[in-house]
Image (cartoon, rainbow, N blue to C red; front, side, top):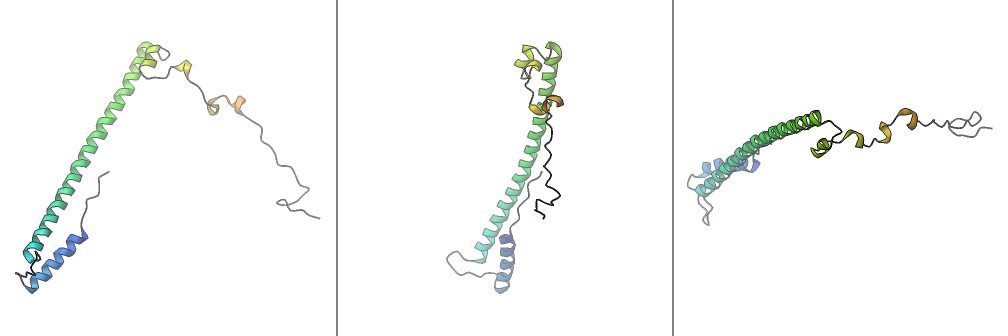
Length: 139
């Protein structure tokens, strides 16, 4: 899933303010570093950093996709390798266990996987209460 690219409401607002300030004067300077030129430089700096950030996100997305594909390829190959060991040496062999497989005769079955005759318990029926409804006592 692609990461969401970022936009900046602050940048949009600053661009609108710059346009409004230019309508007053193109050489507006309040001193102490507060001028149209300095403001425009700060806005352009932020634009370039935001663009670099969004470009880096695209690169990260591309790398993440490549890692996911490589991971899937290794997982598939791991399964095939284990199947080949099982085919050559048998699924009850020590080699199959050494390769990471679970040797058939050593598996433990949970209660839900045992036979239905062993795990079936009769259901308990609620006792009848002489025609009462919802446990209310009737006279």
